[in-house]
Amino acid sequence: MSGLVVQTPHEEHQYLNLIREIINTGTWENTRNGKTKAIFGAHMKFSLKDGSIPLLTTKKVAWKTCFKELTWFIKGSTSNKELKENGVKIWNGNASKEFLESRGLHYEEDDLGPVYGHQWRHFNAEYSDCNEDYSGKGVDQLANIIKMLKNKDELGSRRLLISAWNPCQIDEMALPPCHVLMQFNVHQEKYLSCSLYQRSGDVGLGVPFNIASYSFLTHIIAKHCGLEAYSFVHFIGNAHIYDDHVEQLEEQCKREPKAFPRLYLSNKHDNIEKYSLQDIVWITPYTHHDVIKMDMRV
Image (cartoon, rainbow, N blue to C red):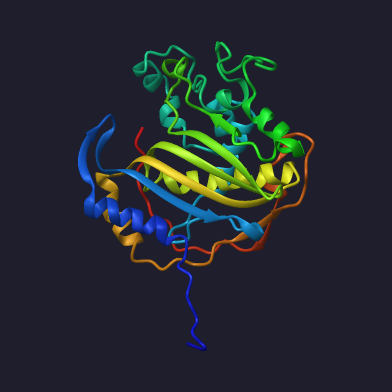
């Protein structure tokens, strides 16, 4: 039919539909930190082409906090003091002395043990505390990925993986990792995609952050390695909603998504650890609905 315009569904509806699926078909479960409604097995895919970044628009996502946490991972840090100095509070509950001792850990307060950054940059290096210099220790998974992505002969590899799940050190961590495995893939020797497997997803609070964080990471690595960001694919094992988040998420589902923002990184640094908020230039702004308040479980 001539003149027919086919509307492309907004990618954010994948997230809203996940909320609806959990509320409508999920089962109530009693878990370590509260009652949840959950399903097992979810999948979403977001375009990163032309600088697109999937910051959810049906509520305001604290993207600066998300980006600061990501750069903390990239640097291999495990000290919550560094996050607090940058105004990031999301790890405070898991970094208290009381919580650490509940895990049988006797670190000083704000030492999170060998969590994400340690595994990304120093996988399985013997851990003492967050103040030690681990340079040259363990396996630098992120550096290995970058090295392969800068080598044209390696661009077709199906082995571009980083694991945060290390069974040897799980009991030394303040919190076992929720987002556990990422894989990169290059299309046509030019376009970079990232997939994430997340064992456990707090759909109300955590998942919007995870979508943003790994999309930012893909843009950073693409810039750093002379590639173009293409897509982010998100797989979630246990996708759950806490009982005291249901009402707020039902309200969020009534909101109509706005266009995702677009960005580019103004600088290409020699060191992957040098990327910061100052490198972000917005091509189109981040417009969104109001904040939705939900309490974080620890």
